Length: 141
Image 1 (cartoon, rainbow, N blue to C red):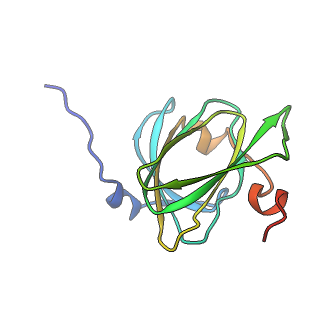
Image 2 (cartoon, rainbow, N blue to C red):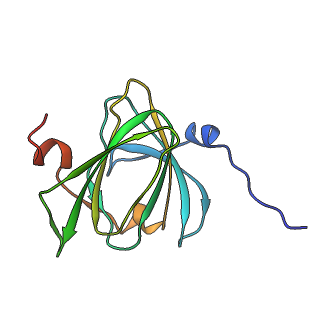
């Protein structure tokens, strides 16, 4: 009989490792270099560093909390100054395509707990940091 690995996201969060590039801690749950699953917790009223990936997409699932995802296209390694913003709530799933700058903002009073799936290169080598999408392009503080 085949066996599977089972991990609890809340237990994994207690051992999350800081990722200073984007400003959060994350825990690797399952997967390999081609596709892995992670969990992270974004503190209330906090925003991640804006960034994009050249290769592959990133899949997100909101477990608890609410927030916003800010997006902008990247063409020839330049950021399009036109952004879009989507509100996300517990239970929402969304996909961020390659070459799409994204910045997650916890707009709620509680932690924003999210699962995300992507190649491991999104964490190690395929991540280009950018200026803040919400706060600099739109002139907000």
